[in-house]
Amino acid sequence: MAIHFISDLHLADDTPALNQLFLDTLAAWRGRIAALYILGDLFEYWVGDDDDSPYLEAPLAAMRAFAADTPLYVMRGNRDFLLGAGFEARSGAKLLDDPMLIEAHGRRILLSHGDALCTDDAAYQQFRAMSRNPQWQQAMLAKPLAERHAIARHARAQSEMNKQQTGLTAISDVTETAVRELLAAHDWPTLIHGHTHRPAHHLHDASSRWVIQDWHGDRGGYLRLDEQGIAQLPLS
Ligand code: MN
Image (cartoon, rainbow, N blue to C red; front, side):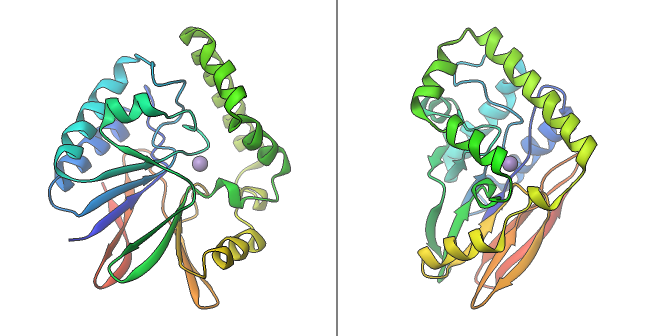
């Protein structure tokens, strides 16, 4: 059976079509694939495992139902980096470290969200280091839920503004240097990542790198791995 990979769904309380696509996709794949890997930014933001937003109930219940039949793995992205043990309990998913090496269908495959590879974006890498610090996370999670939501809304508005001002610039893509370093450190596996919203298949010497497409509007996509190899496929 095939293994499927998705990332960058950016589910939120104001993305009903995407949330529905996620529910439909889980229902369609449940029990019919070997495993599902969600490689980061499943949620537009995640303010803590105690988030009781009503829109979360349906996707978390659908994940629990899915995970009862089919292995379900989730990697943290740059939006939902606060996913923790409480999320695992609520979703039935198992959280993965980034990067994570797996072996499947005779291939060594390295999984990553991809944000750590965008090394030209110094300001972001600084934020990444800070936001992955356990003390910083503890201080954030100690704030009242309403305050964490306000911080997340502010960060989201800021990010939207930056995107509109600068568009899709080179700084938000991975660098060849970071990719080659990561591949070399793991003896040149196949790399699968998301984050950049630039779906493609790149060659790096004997290795290759698949970039998963993001979901937006009412459509998405996924990577399928089976005996035939890897393929990028649409969802709608
Ligand atoms: Mn991302």
